Amino acid sequence: MSDISADAPTGLPVDMSSDRAPDTPMTAASQGLASCHICLKLADADHHLCPRCGAALHLRKSNSVERTLALLFTACVLYIPANLLPIMITDQLGQPTPSTIIGGVVLLIDMGSIAIAGIIFFASVMIPSSKLAMMFYLCWSVRNGPPETARQRTVLYRITEFVGKWSMIDVFVVAILVALINLTNLIVIHPGTATVAFAAVVMVSMVAAESFDPRLMWDQRESNDE
Amino acid sequence: MECDLKIINEETGTSLDDYVACPSCDVIFDISILKDGESARCSRCGHFLSTYRADETSRVIAYSSSALILLVLACSYPFMSFKASGLESLMTLPQTALNLLRDGMPGLAFLVAAFIIFIPALVLVLILVLNVALHNERHYHWLRPVGRLIYTLQNWCMVEVFFIGVLVSLVKVGNMATVVMGLSFWAYAVFSLLFILSLSGLDRAQCWRRIERLQS
Image (cartoon, one colour):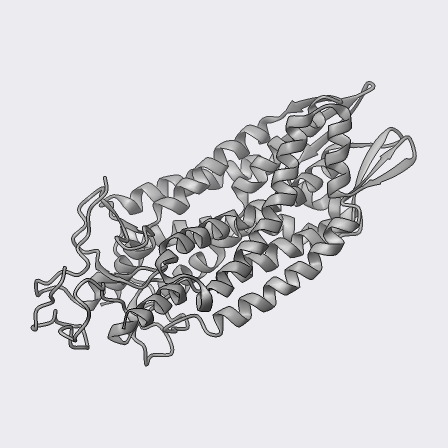
């Protein structure tokens, strides 16, 4: 796929026979085309709205890195109360015991269920915190990362994007336990304030992942090639 | 079956409508050459691009309509029951949100209800309506906003996450008391599966190409 014939396919508004390096694949941006994030339509970047679906059209997501960083800092701030405040309160025989995320893991280790404690530690502590760290790294790498790793970083981005909503498990577990364990005078579970903070962390970091534009990492590589 | 896409089709006769740019790295591909059952990935970064299925609309109609029926079942029967010291408490699916409301967390109750019931139900109805229109090749002025809404909301459906959450809670509670699964539990399990099938069956690029063809 080195050479593109001079008689460009009908409908392409630009001359395809521009002088690109032989093995650089043709990108939409290099042809002045923007790809719609909703319907994948390719349209002239001058359009403000996608001609097919009507969504806002941008060559690249606007202020992607700045927006992502701002949301990541918000998520980090919210992550503090999410871990310090109780995630649920177990009311056993009128004796309320609050427990935090880490406290729940410690309790499971004390009870001897090491495997379950491991899974829960992994899902509710490791994944959310490493996801935030990954996104910080990706934002940093847009300008400073090694260009040859663009593909690996794209995969990394897609993993963090996919993992995003799975952190919501903890919030759902609390909601389920609150609804399920409801024996008045014996044992009742109440949701703790950390649940709200934790749900906010998950949602803010989902929006952060969504506002990051992986194509910037490839743009950096292409501008280095020139 | 995977199809190796040429980066761009040099032959004339293709138009801008046949191309998509990889959402991850922006390379342009011609997806009009995909045959029935073939799917395509970006050759530079590996991002999934599109699958073409001639019977996509009828498949999606089948999945989404059965998923909707199962969601109604899942909301109307007991989900799980919990027994300890001769006492029993029963939980239904809407109660996961309603009990949070009772405990003074209306915001959280709203989010849980939205993520596991309302947004998925809305997305399914929209997918069903859109695909019935596409299947009958009828053009309506609301096809565009409906399509846009489906693709805006689909990130916020957490059906499968909730189901794994149910399994985690079973493990957590399982050794301290008896937990019995109700009809709703099984309905929701099948619902999650059908929900994923209807979302993944609806190919973004192909669905919009169908809408575009009806518009012209």
